[in-house]
Length: 161
Image 1 (spheres, one colour):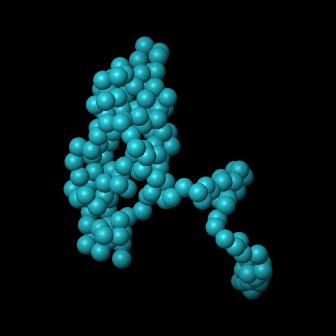
Image 2 (image 1 turned 30 degrees about the horizontal axis):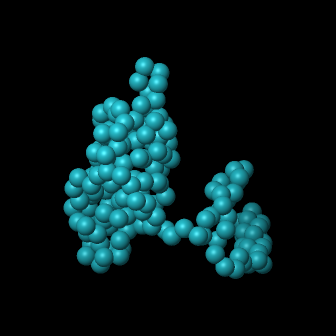
């Protein structure tokens, strides 16, 4: 029985070796068998921080509802792809956190954010990119979507060596 299993395993591994290797940048990723492939956009840099209005500017223009951070996190629909860990922080073995005041629009997209505090400035740009890439389910007040005014914290732990 073990010999048969070893033969099957060797056959599978040999098949992998003969599979053509993709040349150039990755263009598609298949997340799980049975789901459609995801197209990779190679034109965008990995750290994609967009200019954004402050939370105070957006709150002055739009009616918002103060929502606790735990309620907002429960409405998180799409989590950002891991943005990585800053090389400078890796060299210094730093852990850290960054906190933002965030306005989430009626469509669930982040419309404005203000940096409140950061344990170290090395984490700020990656944390901004992470928060900007999030998508939330719209918060409902009396059956109508309304913008949320909430706090978002991004925590960083050093990778295991």
